[in-house]
Picture (cartoon, rainbow, N blue to C red):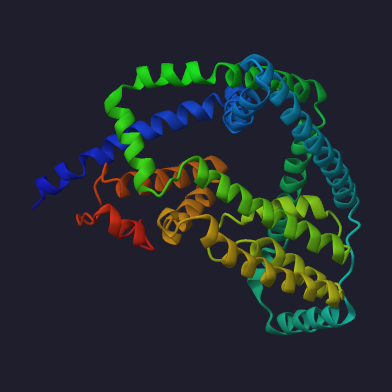
Length: 371
């Protein structure tokens, strides 16, 4: 018999799921239109301490302090992006030319001999399936390579679309200045719009989750930046091609549980070993181990254990994304599990197992998603 009492207890979770889905879909379909303003908002929030310091120390007006802080921040960020884009476009162009010409290094003699023996063994077994479907398998591999090249070509076209980038940078700069200048008034308007009850719940979530929110995001942004730097330095020292692109892929893969950077470093290391570059392959494996050790040391110091997402939740998010073939599914699932963890710790949303834990005990829990 259905437990109506239990379904009634979980009703707030259904409301949260519906509201979160609606907001995410709205953000998803307006992403290209709202991206400059979202970047402007985040940059303006980060610049508030600098603006307040300039007002207090130099007695500047808020508009002047906001203008100078915006120009300084966007100049630094723009210079970094210009370097990364120019370097990345060069790597992508080189890779696409190499891939389309089929200029791929051959395997080392021991590896070729191994595959030759495997081929002789397979021919001796007379497997009819492989013979019947050999053409289809070759076409499948060719189609996968063409898909990868097409995707990278699209990324390259977007990066080289100068008018689009300049327009986005201009709108981002203007939105950053106006939001930074009027930040306090906008903040007061949002407080009036949300009401005292919702503000009370937001403060409760922030306090219960050990000061998460922007600190949580900044902490993980720093962790992923360190991972990117480690990957780039490792690849550059080893003299491997496309260090910037590979390091960016490694940084993106670092959000995945269990394997993390190994999803990128592992295949690249195996490829280097197959082509006879044993030193580079061993160096990649060592770099992978070093990155994992550094991550285990710095992550507990930057992020409280109570704010960590359970690995099962992240695995589910990755699986949903792979099954749907869309990165948006990963963002949706990861965001949902993270917000639910925060709201459940604040006892705003019910626990799935029906066992509520006091906030003090929740802060000590190592697995908030399943506790």
